[in-house]
Length: 302
Image (cartoon, rainbow, N blue to C red; front, side, top):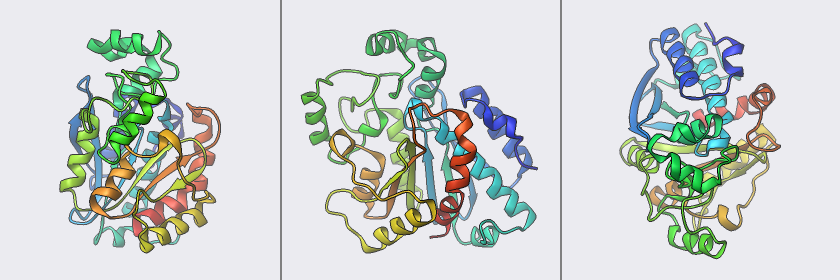
């Protein structure tokens, strides 16, 4: 059975994520969960897996605290995909169960669990890092994006990190902050190390990182202009209606997509879901999911 809509209308803090993931594991015995790492505050970083393990597509969400709607998007997709596998039905015209005998799907719904918790429940959620958080945001956690140590996880990967760090300093970002501080060195944070370590050992064919907001797709980094990656980006754009865009300023370098492309020379994409002001409300999920449903299926089978 599929998740009750009411469960997907709750903000996905740690307790709600555990309920949602627990229900998915109960409903679908072939779905597995691995804890692949822990956050600064010791919260688990969960990975859900279905299908073949030697060649996988990786979907990731919630690198930023305010962008927790991406977690609900991915869990809703896992639910519908698993239901299709269990019942033998097609999903957007694809017999997805047969396909997953040849390729696996790995999903990390929440890369930054501390950041989501802080944004939803305040500085007390940071535990030993409470004072760091309060100093970094001057007591207002409503726009919190970083992890509990005030490091922006999507500025903490080893892809043009030095150049990005210089640009951060030019913008006055020189210490732990609610957003855009890249840390003392690449992969200084357990959250970025966790994802990087998994990619180094997980046989990932290509990866997607879901963020909000803007309704756009980023596909390349640096000199990497692979024809196949561009073709994939155009297909994802076509079925979603999201245009392919170019990141600028502090959005260039240091990110997971940038690192994956630079490290492995394989396709990776940043998908900026929805449009509005972060955090996007849970009421937006249904329309966003319906618009991206075919793109999510395509991302698995490309």
